[in-house]
Structures are given as structure tokens and as C-alpha cells.
Image 1 (cartoon, rainbow, N blue to C red):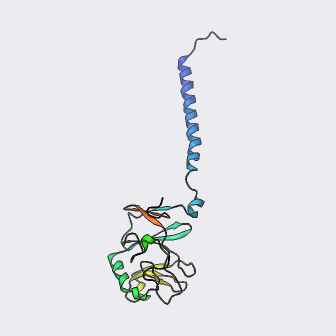
Image 2 (cartoon, helix red, strand yellow):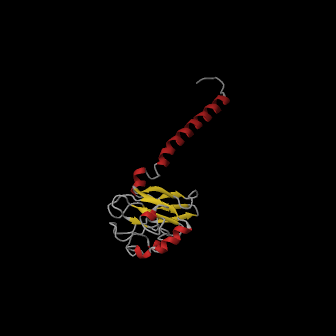
Image 3 (tube, rainbow, N blue to C red):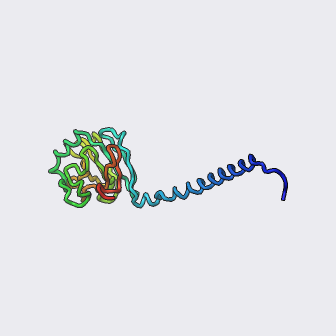
Length: 196
């Protein structure tokens, strides 16, 4: 054994330095571990819910998000769009949405949880194309209706509630995905209201 005096300052420094390096190492190992708890991109595309921020959505604007590998539209409908939807119900194939293309909570005149916000899967029910949103130019396709969705592949037409018009190839209204409002400006697509 050495008879040299103990240097308490050096001992304290080594203890603190070892603790700091160990703490950094533990945090470095914990970060990837905790991140692994989040759903992967593959899991998200397989059906994990998707949050949509609608705080900057302007009246008449459409935004697209992806859920389960499908495009989902979120549209802020104007009062004029809502009013015009009532005027062409006689031209629709399924105006009361009796076919099961939406949640029961969305089986209403607007096919939505809130009249001004429309959420739909943006895939034509004919052959799976993605219709175009014609804002202000839909009157060329359907007289008396300014706004709607038009599928250029085979000419299917849908109103601002995603209801299909008669005499077009699409057999059903656009699909309404399960969704809920988390708050006034956030929608959770992929989870139905009241279902955990």
C-alpha cells in the first residue's frame, strides 16, 4: 500500500466525471428505446390514426393527408356550398346516404360531424381514381352547382358531401373515414368519436 496522502479533490472530480459520462450514456441508450414505442411509418400507413391541424384551413379550401395509404380530404365548406347541396338532391343516386359508406354519426344531410368541415377518402368508388376538387368550376359538369368533385378518368361527379350524382359510373358515395375532433382545430382521422 502507498502511504501517499488521499487527494479528495481528485477523487470528487473522478466521481462526478464518471457519473456524468454514465448519465449521458444511459440517456443515449434510452432515447432510441423510447422512440421505438412510437408507431413506425409502416404501422402508420397500416392504419394508425393521423392528426390533422385545421387551424389555418380557409373557407372553401381543401387539404389532403394520407391515412392507410389513401388520400383523405378535409374541406372547409362555405355557407354557399352548404346551401347549394340542398338544391340538387333529386339528381343524386343516394342522397340520404343509405349505403354504408360513412359512420353512423355522419349519416346526416352533410355527411359530417360538423356541417362546415367535410372529411372524406379522396378515392372514386368506381375504379379507385382520385377526383379533382372543382371550386367554382363544377357548374360546367352539373348545372346550378358551383363546387364539387369530378373524376376525370370516367366522368363520375360528387357533390360537396361526397354524394354521387346519377348517370355516372361510380356506384356509391365517397367513403367517410372514421374521425373525431380532438379540439376546435384538430381532427384525428382513423379513430371514431367516442371509441378509444
